[in-house]
Amino acid sequence: MAVHPIKRLAGQTVIYGLSSIVGRLLNYLLVPLYTHLIFETQEYGVVTLMYSYVAFLLVILTYGMETAFFRFYENQPENRQTVFSTTLFSILTTSVLFILLTNVFKQPVATALGFGSHPEYISWMGVIVGLDAIAAIPFARLRAENKPLKFALIKFVNIGVNIGLNLFFLLFCPWAMEQGPESLMPFISSFYDPGMGVGYVFISNLAASVVTLMLLVPVMLRSRFAFSRPLLHGMLVYALPLMVAGLAGVVNESLDKILLKHLLPKDIAMSQVGIYGACYKISIMMTIFIQAFRFAAEPFFFSQASKKGAPELYAQVMKFFVIACLFIFLGIMLFMDIVQHFIGEAYREGLAVVPILLLANMFLGIYFNLSIWYKLTGQTRYGAWIAIIGALFTILLNLWWIPIWGYYGSAWATLACYFLMTLLSYFWGQKYFHVPYELKKLSLFILAALAVYFVSLPTAALTAPWKYAMAVIFLGVFSGLILLIDQSLWEQVKKTFSFK
Image (cartoon, rainbow, N blue to C red; front, side, top):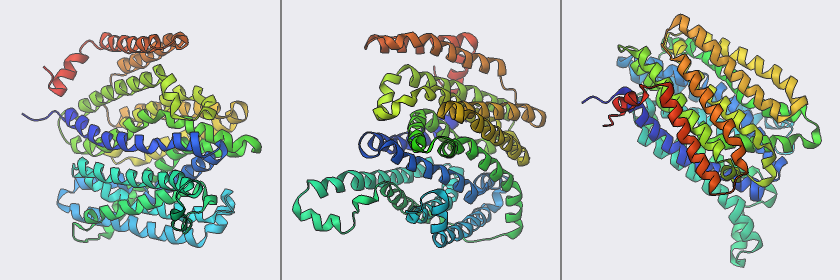
């Protein structure tokens, strides 16, 4: 019996999610290490700020070619080797050039970004971004070939190397220098510099990126080289609007941290960036779920596009996606007194931004679902326009609200931006590629989750285990509301996942 497409999508999302959840949970465990034991809030602000710049650079260096690869890979099955090698050659060329330029101009760039005393940060981050951009294409090939297990294994190795080196440099080496056996001192002191501080975060990431690319070399060399200039031209025409959309999207996701540094008083700016960045990390489960879904969904959407009933299938995927996001939202917020220990006590003053950011990320995921219309129809310029409008909206709101409310203004600006982008994509998409989304039910699902959340707030004053018992009851109430709103939902679930 054929597997239902949504069941296959869910299965691959679980595998991608397992690598993301286990890997990123382990990686995110570095946040407690950083925020409880190692760095002051302003030092962690440096880490947050540097990775905000990295987000911009990764979009520039992949310039939409990852999505272009999926589209041309599916549309030209007889030409897949050429599609892969042309894409890889293009990304490889631009990434190597970028690595060279960042090393040549590291000092002026470091000075411009406020890290003039650490130009090595620029060199390291340049190599990290370049290698990660190159790795994106063989990773995309594994996704297109439905090889999530291999994808997940390599991701696990990346996370393991990164975490292992962080623990080595930030915990073991300081311990060995201060309390370790005398025999270890010559070995440790030969390469460890106590003054390096946050630099070891970047060195660990660099080593992980190198190892990851080495593991992907067999995927890169598996097919013969076949470059096509006309194909590259067609891919770039399709991809470059996606790069603009991606850049504008990163503005929405990362510019707030950069603006916080420049718009807040200098004596508190980096500390506030660190607090906001740490609280942002608490939305981990929502972020991981959306990332895992995106890994599985993009090739899935393209592969289903030509099949009968695709629009109805996309609508059903959206419904299940929104319900899953709302359970994550409630799960985090109802158990916040446990979740808050993920970050150090000095960072918890910003916890009130967490529900705002969770909802913002949910709408970002909804927008990703909706965006399939312009990717399938080739009208990627609309994606660029939506993202540009969202970016301008984000910039204006941050400039307005940060001086008034600080990082709370940034959180609300993020939510407002993603909600606006969702609306624009929905109304434009229905005009050019109609999908019968159950808009009324989706809206009621969201309202039901918000109602349960607000009703639950007084129970925060209860003591354990009563507080946790009430949290479970509230999750059960939400489940009942979902089934009340959509009385056919359970039958759909049983049919989709072959439950008896």
